[in-house]
Length: 150
Image (spheres, one colour):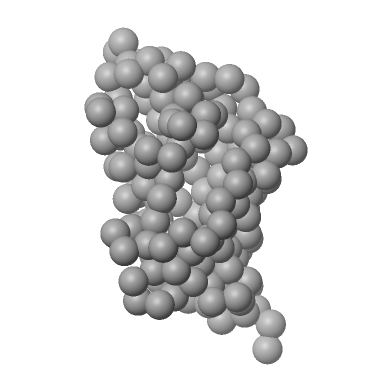
């Protein structure tokens, strides 16, 4: 039986770095490689990066548990140093589990940057996310913050 469960979350971070520096961590392949990876033990299978409106980014690989995930993203709106809107599909072991849209807003604040990421997800056909997407996105954003300090 087909079904859809809807969920959303918002993540906020404040960093001492200028919006231009934070934006570059998303906009350049070198910057993104420093933080947009799988967890320890992740074996990358495929990766592509085309950061522009209409551009596509993919990342797939096998986790230490044996689970295979695939991320397939299209950038919908990009305002340099201010906003990134993208939609993406996630697959788990070859099964489509979700379709999501996310918006990243970068605002100058106190000499640094306030990042607000808001995501809306549609979880498909009985897939129970149980908060794992929000947890994983928090982990990625924390990893991004560490990459800015390096």
